[in-house]
Image (cartoon, rainbow over all chains, first blue to last red; front, side, top):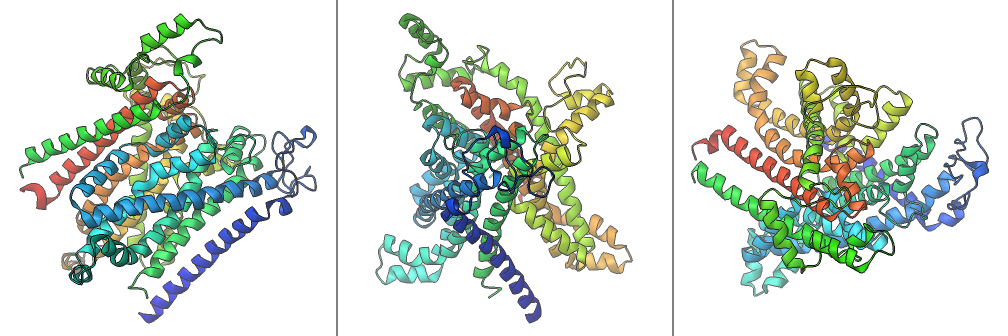
Length: 283
Length: 336
C-alpha cells in the first residue's frame, strides 16, 4: 500500500513539475518577449510570405517557425500572444474566483434567501450557452482586454459559486463552526475566519482550472475576431488565420495550436495535481 | 411528493429560468451603444426613414415596454423579424435547428459509444498496461475542450490525412431535393446511402470534437462505478457459477453500475449542445450556432434573442427529461 502511495505521489510530482515548468517558461517568454522574438510580430513583408518552418525546404533563417500569408513571423507572434493569454488567465481567473467564491460562500453559509437568490441566478446562467453569451457580451461592450475579462467573469462565476456553495454547506455542518459561534464570533467572522480557510484548497484548484478556461475563452473570442484589436497578435487570432489557409500553410495553424494545447493542458494538470496534493487520503 | 406534483414544480422552475434568460438577454443587448437601425440604412438616410424603421422594429418605445411587447409575441410563437434578412426569426431558427440537433445527437451517440467502450475495455483489462494507457488518454481528453479537439481534428483528418470534409454540411455538388431539414434522418429513410455517406463525412469531425470530452467523462465515471460493482457479492457469485469475464462485466455488473453515468450524461449533454456554437463555426457547419455568431456580428438583435431563447429552451427541456428519466429508472424514487 505504501509503495502504491509513493508511486502515485511520484506521478503527481512529475505532472506538477512538467506543467509548472511550461507555465514558468511562458511567463518568462511574456516578460522578455521583445528580447527573444526574432522579428517584429507586426512587420508585414510580402516577400517573406508563407515561409515554411526551419526544417522544411525553402525556409529562411530568422523565421524559425515560418511566416503567415502577410509575411509575419509565426514565432514572434506566438511569443507576443503569450502576453495577452497570460494577462487574461491571471486577471480574469482571479476576479472570477473572488466573485464566484464569495457568492458561493454566502449562499452556502447563510442559506435562506441569499441562497435562494444566488442558486436561482446560477440556474438561469446554466441555461445560457456560455460561448454564445461571451460573444454577445463582447459585441455589446466592444472589443478590448477589459471587455474580455468582464465577459469571462460574467459567464464563469457560477463555476466557483456552485462548488464553493456545496463545500460551505458541508463545512457549516461541522462542529468547529458551531463552537466558533458559541465562542462569540459573528456570522461574517465565522465565514471568513473559519469556513474560508477550509475551502481554500478547493478554491486554489478551481482557480488554476479557471485560468486554463480563461485562455480558451480568449482564444475562442479572437477566433471569431472579437478579442483585442486585430493588429495585436493573439493565439486565437493566429489560429483563425491558420484555419483559413490550412491547406496552403499548415504551420500557421499548428504552432499556435500546439502552444495553446500545452498551456491549457498545463493549467488543468496543475489543478489536478493540486487537488491530489491537498487530498488528505494521499497525504 | 407525487410524481405529478414533482413535474409541475419542475415546470414552474423551468419557466422562471426561461423568464430570467429572456430578461437578461433582452436588457444586455439593449445596452448596445449606437442604434441598431443606423447600421441598416445607407449613410445620409433621412430622419423620417430612421424614425419609420425604428417604429417598425419597436425601437422607439421604452425598454420595459419593448420587453413586454416582445415577450407577449414570444408567448404566441412570434419571435419578431430579423433585421438583416427581413424574415421572421421563428422561421429562420427553425430552419437551422435540425442541423444542430442532428449534430448534437450524433455527437452524443459517439460519446456514449466511445466512453462506454473505454470503460468496459479498461475494466476487462484492469491491472494491465492497457488500463494505464486508457487512463492517460482519458486525462488528456478531459483537460482539453471541444474547440481545441476540433482544431486538432482539422489538422489530422483535413490536412495530414484528408479523409473527411472539414467544412459545410453537405457537398454543394450533390443534386438532391430534401423534403425536411433533417438531412441525415431523411437520407436514411429514403434509402439514399450515397447522400448519407456524404453527410456523415461532413458531420463526423465536428461530432467527434464535441464527443471527445464527454466520452472521457463517461469513461471515467462508468469505470469507477464498474469498479465498485465488481467487488459486490453477487458479481463474485456469478463468477463462481462459471460465467466468463465478459458475461460478468456486461450482463451482471453493467446494469447496476450504469445509473450514475446516465444522469451525468444528461447534464453533460447540455454542455455539448452549448459547444456546438463554436464547433459549427470552426467547421462552417450550417447550424444554429453558426447563425448565432453571424447574428451577433451583424447586431441582429431580434435574431440573437430568438436563438438564445431557443438554446435556453433546449437546455431546460433536456434537464427536465433527465430528471424524469432518472426518477423512472431509479427504484428508490419510483414509488416515492
